[in-house]
Length: 160
Picture 1: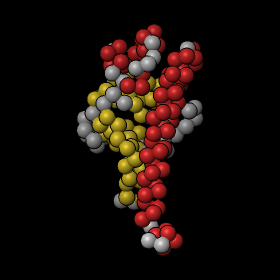
Picture 2: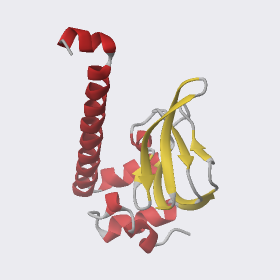
Picture 3: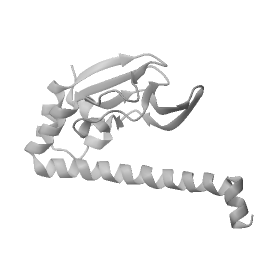
């Protein structure tokens, strides 16, 4: 069973009132995963929102056979599987455990309904999600531009 302590240890949920957190507990379940176990794959239906209680997870994409790129890592106290918060979505990456993990799994549709019941909490939660996504987008844009400037054709155009 998922406890209030479990839920309160997730950073993204910190700003939500206890009455909302108390409703998340019974809709969630704990699950153990082994090292290298895949939680979801790219293209899978995104039905669940995941809260990492313990462990570390990599978000990866396979760009070609034998070529896997890590998009980021999730550490204890953070969440992933945000595609589940957009009805009808699929996962855009793999989630792979780098060590044994304990994950709280919450149905995305039920979580969204809960946020709809309390608009202020829903806004607070989604605002935090947007901050995290903006940070990721800024970081990936910087990485992309850095890689592009190292490309030989681009270096010729820049006179480097």
